[in-house]
Amino acid sequence: MKNLIDYIDEFGNIRFSQKEFNEIDNLIFSQLAYTDYKGIIDYEGSLSLMETAKRFFAIYNDDDINKLIGISAKSAQLLKKCSQFDRYKDVMICHYINNVNEEIDKQFSAVHFILDNNIDVVAYRGTDVTVTGVKESAMLSYMFPVPAQIEALYYFQETCMKHGEDIILCGHSKGGNLAIFAAVNCSNSLKKRIIAVYENDAPGFPKYFFDRYDYHQIKDKIHLLTPQGSIIGRMLYHDAKPAIIRSSASGLKQHQASSWEVDGDSFVREEKYDAFSDFIDDYLDSLLDYISDEELELFFDTLEYVAVNIGIEDFYDIKEIDIRKVFSLIDSFGRIEENQKEKFKQILKKVSADFAKEYFSEKAQKYFDKFEKRNKISKESVKEDK
Image (cartoon, rainbow, N blue to C red; front, side):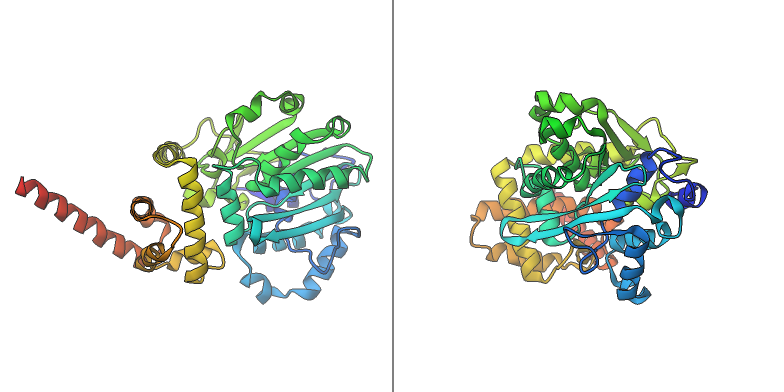
């Protein structure tokens, strides 16, 4: 099972001027967008990828990298790997921005890579698993546009006017959504320079988005890549036909780009999504039918309130969550009425019970096993009474 690293080992010494940018390069740059370049590259400055790696690892040692969240740690390791190969080491990096605004629920980050054939690759960072980042991704289900989409367009317009060559946009997860939004809404002069837009396991858009003339102007340049067990990449609506990629992982872990299988200079394809992906897709559709847009917004506001008060800084902490404390905090949240509190708790019970066995800690599993057992006993008692 080969992956991104094997691709770099095989083709890493062939420059972009000798071998065209392809779908695997797209995913590599989309992952490099998760690296924190603060203090190394500013918005106006530029550095080669090799020099960027030298400065990055002069600041961060292996222990520091290991403390990062998974996707940022993998991105740092990928930066080091790329810096050792001719195809990537002389790529110029510029226009780095990382803007998180909790007051308006915005998490936005992007960076440019200038290839040796002068193609400008604009890479948008996906959700960074902070509470703000995850909430804004959730907002895609009931708000359009979200703050990060608006900034993605402004960023694209402002930075790409400083360059005059062909443009590729890309991003993983929410980053892919931002790439599509910017490409569709940008000026006609920029649209003409776009040669490809890649969305890697990215959430989609409202249905009406695809009826717009400016969407159809770039429709044929869009590449949608999703793993066989995709969950994020099947949220909301897409118009492009997906390329379904084989993954070495299972469940939600297929969202991790490092699990996508490679054969030569392309990804290994599957004919259809797996049963788990189909189940989740149907499950989320039914869940959204159960709750209105207004309730959905209030639901995520409630979860944010709970996360802040329970001390969750990012959603990897969810593995150690105490569901009883969550319910207690929901009860204390003054913005929602009693019937909504009960509805939200029922939603959390349902979702948590459905997925505890695969994604939650052993402690949480035991709690939900007890909950399900009590539920079963209670139902049986009601039947006997009748």
